[in-house]
Image (cartoon, rainbow, N blue to C red):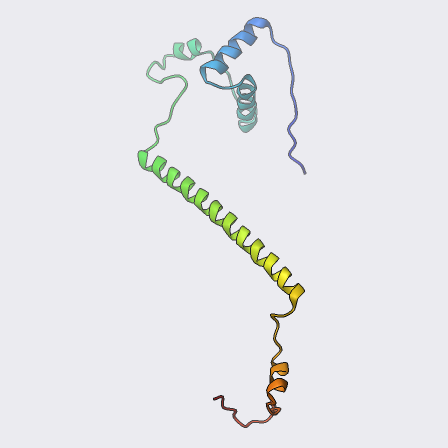
Length: 145
């Protein structure tokens, strides 16, 4: 199955459009990103989501909670996350270097195959030097040197 993006279009009145544009500007997002976030939240919560204007949210008696809700994250978690991101970047760079080196070696090997001079058969060396043929099936030990 493929995961293709689909386009959803609908019409809103000019006042609603201006309000949405202001929301997007406040959050430094594009208007399409606001809709994408909303649709993703809607899908993630199986349609059980309610968009509440800020003034209604504050009127619910929850004055202590800021809008939008925030979560505090320990500094150690943030540092560990940053460390892992740096390590992942370093590993990606190393992987790229290893791929380049493997490509270099592969290209060098292919170019060496064309020459054929680097391949030495031991049988050919033995014949050149006039070395006696060895009976490899005999049990007698053979000493070098």
